[in-house]
Length: 271
Image (cartoon, rainbow, N blue to C red; front, side, top):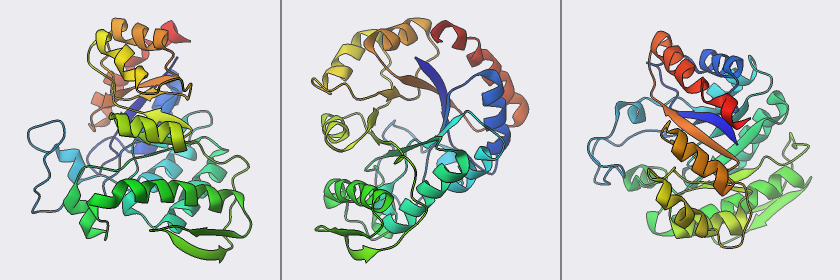
C-alpha cells in the first residue's frame, strides 16, 4: 500500500513545489490537492465536517498551476486532485489542463473528481445542484472523449459539442478517481471511474462496510485523510487499498517538514 498526502495549496502555507520535492525525498507516493474556486460570502450550505469552514478553503490556489510547478521539481511523485470540482469547470478547458499536466509530468497524474457540497459555489458557476450528479457523469465521459479521439464530440443532456480538435492527447488517459463517501459515489466510481477516492473512516471496524459499497468491483481505492494510526493503516492494507493519504494542514515550511518527517516514519512498513 502506498502513502501520500492530501492538502490545500494556499498563499499562506509551504509553497506546493517545495512541499512536493520534500515529499518525494521522503518516499511519499502522491500529492493530492483540494480545489475551491471561491467561497461565497453568503453561504447556507453547511460544512460537511461540522463547525466553521476552515481557513484554507478561502485561500486555495489553482490546483493545476500548483501541480504543474510541482511536476517541474519532481520525477516520481504522483500528482492529483482530491478533489477537483468538475461540475463547476468548463469540460473542454479542463480536458486540456489535465492532459497538459500529464504531458509535462510524464504521465504522473490522477484526476480526482466529485460533485461537491457548496451549493452557492455551484450556482455561481451556473451549475444546478439538483442535477450535478448527471452533469458529472457526462463531463467524465466527455473528458475521455477529448483525450482519446482526434475528432472529439459529445452530445448529452448537459454537455453538448460538435467535433473538435484538442491536443495534447495523453499517451494513456489519466485515471479518473471518483470522490465521495456515499453509496452513490461508490456506484459512480464503479460505473464511470478508474478508482474510488473516499475519505478514510475513523475506525477499523468500519472499513469492511466501506469497501462493501463497491460490491464485487476491484477498482483501486485511495482513502484520503487517514489518521496516522498503524492499526488503521494495517486494516486498509489488509482490505486491499491501493493508497491512503494523510491530511496535511497548510503551514509554514518548518512545521510542514516536521510533520512530513513524522509521517514518513510509517512509509517503510507498507513498501
